[in-house]
Image (cartoon, rainbow, N blue to C red; front, side, top):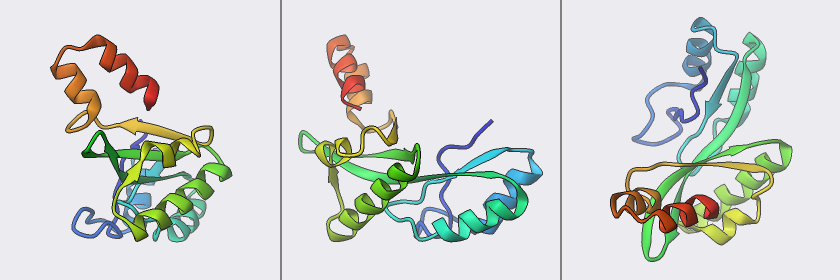
Length: 144
């Protein structure tokens, strides 16, 4: 099992554990990979890299972001596939420090190097499912 949406204490008011505790728990539970996906920031990335190297767990860098689509906002998680994805996360984090919401167009810039995890609650995917609109569900999946 791999936890793909893990927030640390760098996610103000949203994460309680230190990066060290997250990595320690992953190792104790025989996890080979663990993600760090703080909200809008990558502040813990270097600490996370060092902690995972120390115990032999593979780090997966990510970030929870707020997106705007058709005048609605929702959160989603982005994971870096590679170094280019990590650089993309840095650019998006910087953009989020200037404004609190990203657009799909900004994420599409990095589509080849990022994985998008669509949270169903509160986003366009959930809305399409609740409306039983198969075309909209498919369109949302393709968009993400």
